[in-house]
Image 1 (cartoon, each protein chain N blue to C red):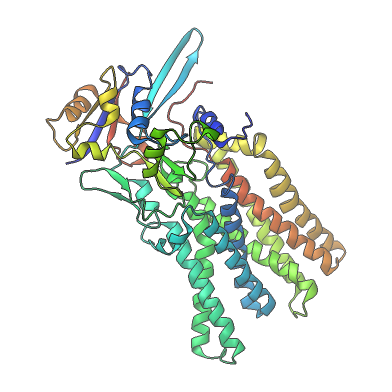
Image 2 (image 1 turned 30 degrees about the horizontal axis):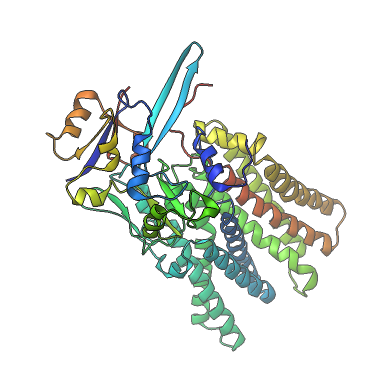
Amino acid sequence: MRYGMVIDLKRCFGCYGCQLSCKAEHATPPGVFFARVVKRESGTYPNVRKVFLPLLCMHCETPPCEAVCPTGATSKRPDGIVDIDREVCVGCRYCMQACPYEARYFHAKTRYYFGAQGPTEYEAVGYAKHPTGVVMKCNFCAHRLARGEEPSCVLTCPTHARTFGDLDDPQSAVSRLIKERGGEPLHPELGTGPSVYYLPA
Amino acid sequence: MSVFTDPFDRLMDDLQETARPQREWVDGRGLLLIAGHFLSGVGAGGWAFSSALGFLPGEITSLIVVGLGGLAHLLFLGRPERFWRMVRVRSSWVGRGFVGLNILMAAGVVSLALRATGLGGGGWASAVWGLSLVGAGIVMLYKGNVYAVCRAIPFWNSSLLPVLYVAYALRGGTALLLLFLPWTPLSADHGLIEVLELWIGLSAGVCILFYLTIMANSSVGARRSVEDLLRGRVAAAFYGGVVAVGFVIPVAIGLLNAVTPVSMGVLALVGLASLVGDFYVKYAIAKAGRYLPHVYQAR
């Protein structure tokens, strides 16, 4: 079993639904985006293109963040999810420098979206589960997977651009999509073996 | 480049960048990490030279400087109370550095204590001193490797960086000695130390030149970093701190000394300028770091 995700760049139209649903699911503080969409324009007028690239933790086969962690707080689970033990993390942020996908965030201090007004009821409850002084990141919504549900970003995507499943199962939807549509990971040259694949636009 | 007072707004701006600048290890509390790298490097280099020369004030100062470097590292951590967990040396250069720093501190203190109690002549004392040098070696070596293994930041991902950091640590050690010599009755060859300092300084300068030349002809992210360093947001620190203070002043005084011997006070200025340059090298390299771009923009 190795969880993985396939993102169809042909279907993604940059609605930020994944980004918002992830923030709602995890109640991440301001400035933290476990899932985010990068938008870039490329080319020169009149031949221009807009590219939408959804990013999240790639849950690599050989995670550079795990290798550099001096405390062992970052580890790879048997199901392929790369997770952080927030009780062990020392907050050195070495993993943030090592992650080529910029998927990690340091939670320095609790901030609220409405500043001096203090936390909303949602923030007061949601942010309580995020300790300060440690690094945080996407965990493929492990709590949802434990309940037999899909990750929040997959469920929310209005164009079904995201598919989630077992990369070790050749018959799974993710494996078939990768094979049939020529799925490629981001920065394969780094040899990290990401579990998130992109189908060409 | 926009200027933001709020880190959240700055992050939003950074996320729009094609090659996002790294800020965690240089801005705000990140300066503590740069200070930690600078102090521990200078202290380790200072210990190596001072103990080789049997220069007690230098040895004591070097250990204090290393200790201050450790403290700066500690203050940078998000959870400093968990520092004792940083012992995973199998694959983490931060873990190796932490262990090396502790070896240097412990063996250094024991080595000084053995000498103070008149037991400094035996085999045990030599072994402890050797161990302290191993610790100093690890401390000098680990910092460059910490950066060099980060493939996410192309500008740092170079095997030249560890060499550069070791060179600067050794130079820092001699600079520390030069800073002390005017006020101590050390019967060392001051001229030799100054020549050594300049030689290491010139080597480090050549190393930086090679490093920047390679990076300027490397990947997009690395080229953006070099632009930052030479023409962008890090240029003032690079030209002012690294080149002018850290390189031109020591070399100019060194050349002057070759023609007309200068006073010990002026040699101390060489040490001070070199130390400032050492700090700014670490600052500039960290500040110029940019993450690998995910989507390449046509220019």
